[in-house]
Image (cartoon, rainbow, N blue to C red; front, side, top):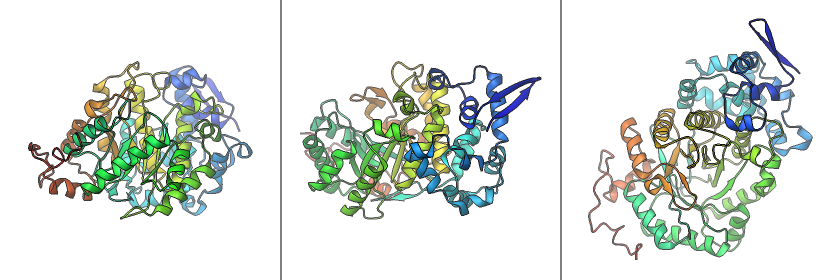
Length: 460
C-alpha cells in the first residue's frame, strides 16, 4: 500500500509503510547512513502528516519484515492481543497520539492497552510527538517488576551498580562495589560486564557478587553480563545465577548476529526460573538493546533504526524481564551523531518500551568520538527522571574503564534523586538506612572510617 501527502502543491509519495516510517523519523545519522532518511525537512513533515492518517489496523496487515522470513515478526503478530487492541482499533496513528495525551489515557488504561499494541504502532506514534509529549506519556506508565526488591514504582529511580574492570581484577571490582554502595547505588542490579566470556572467570565473578550480597544481606540481585550460552552452561554447573542477560535486536537476523534465537532465550528463561532464587518475584531476565544494532549487522531489512529498536521490545516483552536497558549512545556517532540525536532517541526508546509494558532503563551515555558531552547527559538524565525511567547506570566517575565510554556516576544518581524527590527501591532504601548510608529523609550520610563495608576485607 502506498501513501502520500501534498505540501505547497508538491506531492510526496511513499511506496510502503516501511518507507513512510523511515521518512517520518526525526533526523539521525544511522538512517542517513542506511539511505533511509528523508532528503529534506519538508519531506519529513510530509511523511509525518501521511503517517498520522494511517489506520492502526494497517500495522496488523502490512508486515514490515515478511512473516515467513522473520521469527520476530511472527512473535509480534501471533501474540497480538486483539481484545486489548479493540478499544483503539478504529484509531489512526494521529488519533492514538491525541488519545495518549488525553486524561483518558491514565495508568490503568495504558496498562490494559499494552498487550494490544505492536512495536510498529508505538514507533509510529512516537515519530509524531515532541520530546515533552514522549516524557508526559511515559511518566503516566508504571511497570513494576520484582526479584529481591521492587523496581519501577512511581516516585522511585533505581541504579545498576556497574563495577567493570579491564582485567576483571577482583580488588578493582570490589573497590567500585564499595564506592557505589556507599553512595546508595545498586538497587536495580549489581552487574558486571566481564572483560572475557571465559566460563571460569564469569563463575568467579558471580560467586564474588553473591558472597558480597549475602554477607551484607543486600536486597538486590546480581548479574555477570556474559553471553546467554555461557550463563546456561554455568546454571548447569550450579553457579549462583540470579539473572540471565542478553543483548537482543528487532529482527531474527540481528539476534542471529548476537548468537541467539527465541528458542535459546526461552531455554535460558526456563533454566533461570528453575533456580528459584528470587524472594519477592521471579522476573529473571535482563535485556539490553540499542538503536543501530540491526544496521551495524546489516540485518535491518530496510527499516529505520528506531522502528527496529521498538521491535526488539517485542522480544523482551515475551520473557517478562526484570530489567530492559536501552544503551542509547553506546554504538557511536555513525548511528546517533550528537547530543541532540542521543537525547531524542533515548526519550523515544523509553516511551516505546514503557508503552509496550516494559521496565525501561536507559544507559545515559556517549562514546568519546560522538559530538556530545556530559552536559548533554545531564540534560538527558534530568528528562528521564521526569519521565519516570526505571533505572540508570552507576559507574565510578561516569567513565567505564573497561568498555571505554561515558555514562552516569553515583553522584549523578544522587543529583537526580534529590532534585526530583525520587527514592531507591523501597527494600534497598531500608537497607541503606540500616547501614547508616542514608538518613531517614533519604539523604546521603558521610561514611565513617570504621564503616563495615570499608572494614570488611573486600579491598584487601
